[in-house]
Length: 567
Figure 1: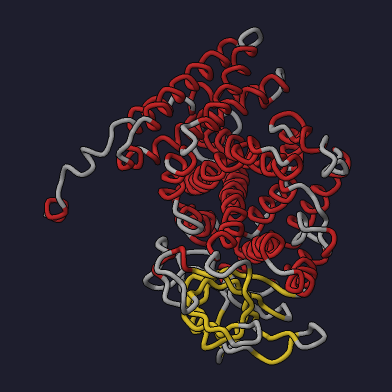
Figure 2: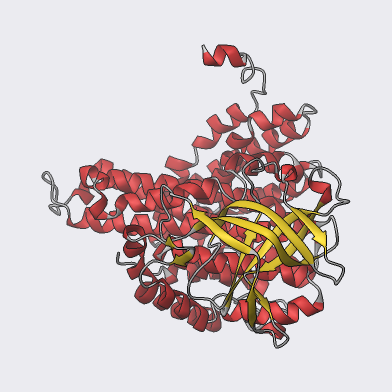
């Protein structure tokens, strides 16, 4: 499927909308000048267009398979991985001491989104490695870092994370995998894990698994879980892959989409592993990886939306149906409505994603607690709204194709099938919403209030230039503030959770309007101002109904008993 990397959109957002200038002004990221970032994005975009995009359909039509216990990846994926690795795209934000580029997460996020748009199944592989790299950087011993990080960043080895078990999905504390000390500083890990993305491949020398398991003296629940690094091949005295470890791929899941990405059932039978972080503190280490992944998964949604939008737009420009000025369906009002919805939401979701990444960079560069709180607040919004946008745009793209969208040969349906799982893994979108109104509001809503203050202040200043756009943004933000105060005041958490999804979506709508307004001021006579006007007049008004729903409480949700629901 043809794909064009939207480099100009990234450059505009970084230069004018999401505050990346502040990131580049820090000492840590001073080398991330506009010219350098532009060159990086251009080179990565070329790789996505020329190498990854041609692998999109083959991966869907020729899925990964397990033959006599050996995993065989889709045609061309080995060459795709090689291009990703040789370009340095795995270790973009990694520590230069171990071979990384040390780039801001904002740049890494943009590149990851491009890879997601080009071929989401393959992009999952470097994303898993990036998450493991960050977890090891923060929590592993110096010995483990020295051995594993250079190999992971170069792409010689790949990484995974193993959380889920048949009886332990979102309730990770219910896991039964165990680890026994071997007496030599290593551990024997035993258990079965499911839904392991890229649990194996045939193009890396080694596959390194981060596995959650419980030590013999580990307490029940999440507090007693430890994290272990368990490689497919045990490194020898020279750090090269040695004997095979006692682990295997039992089977591959037959999935709705992402056919090119092998989702494995993994079996560990006393496999040798090394402790990462402290005993019984595995969830703290794993959350480092999961938070990285949640930003990345939000980016996957945005990337899938970009791919689906480009695919639908190309079809609309060519499809002749009815009498229109151009002769094609792009001039039908309803088709234009769909394309404008797709484009406007895509811009909003991408801006939220990059703003989230920029906050992570600012927290890392400055150590400022307010930036860390901003990054934490935006993460569940980025993940949930990014993936919802991916699903919504992919579904709308299918509708633009009409009947041909339902026919697999056009490729429109693949975008929806591939992106659908992003709302489920790395914490379902419902869990993200509950996290937003729960853990992220434990400060009494202060982090949210600071962000809302900024949005209102900007809207107030914008009244002098574009009052017809600034006014609705200010009003929506004030309504969001009132809803936030209502949520924080609820002592019964079910009252918060009942409206959590609606609240998150309303927050995302307001954030999207804020970034569209900034774009309109930066490009007053250009297409971005026109797009902002559409978003603020046609998409933003959803916030009112969402906030009404967010403040209903849990009473009506539980009004019907379980028996009555089943009647």
